[in-house]
Length: 339
Image 1 (tube, rainbow, N blue to C red):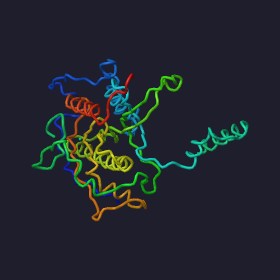
Image 2: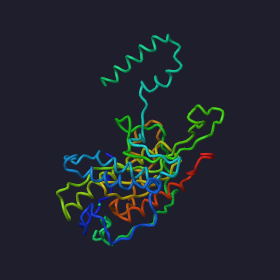
Image 3: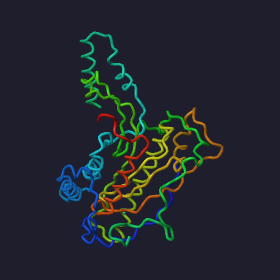
Image 4: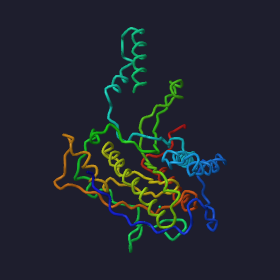
């Protein structure tokens, strides 16, 4: 089994019920770009939250109903940056199957056209079978501890381990993130304007991973509610560690990735560094024959998650602004020429 995440102190009960705006707090000066471009975007998030909380339309408190809210927030976050895109269910790890290889060479088939059409019909048939006292935040920090700086030395221990870029997750063909924000690099092809407007994608870089869990039970209040929120978000945090490890295994040069763990409208974030998940990377890489394990088995280091906050509060907007700025400043994260 992969290394267990460090134990987390359960949060204190929030002094304010979830979903009730804190009117005492001033509105942030910065707004999500999508809400500036489209003023009704904020109204959409209100309706999407109401839809997910609805006992009529989400009586079973299903996770998927929260995807609409987070898709809206993430899209609004990068609405003014053309080469930052939001992708749901993005495979951070993917093992091609035999069918995928056949699809890659379908254009090279020299067979009779009628036979190709028959094959396509057969393929179609196969497919058919086929989280404190503060009303804004919930404190998750252990007693006596304080948030640490986000900056980290990347080189610590990173050179002692070599990971192959073809290592699959054990007994799995893909690892999916609920949402990813990708940075695309593109090259202009003026002579081929009929080919996707004259653009060719040359590089894809994962900037942000987002894992969404269902909200805590609507019948809970106080400390019980806070504990339930914390447990759901911890599940998302554990999933993000696995996803980040696979990202680092595939991209040997990538040093960090931003992450958001959510439970309904509550979320917390962090920067996951390669050096913090070496133990998880080792677990998934260990069976690959080309993997060169270190002399001592690596272990994961504690991640610096911030406190849980609700999406409709000013402190949430402030954090999203930090993520927005960081995504724009990442290595090579600039707008392609002439976009």
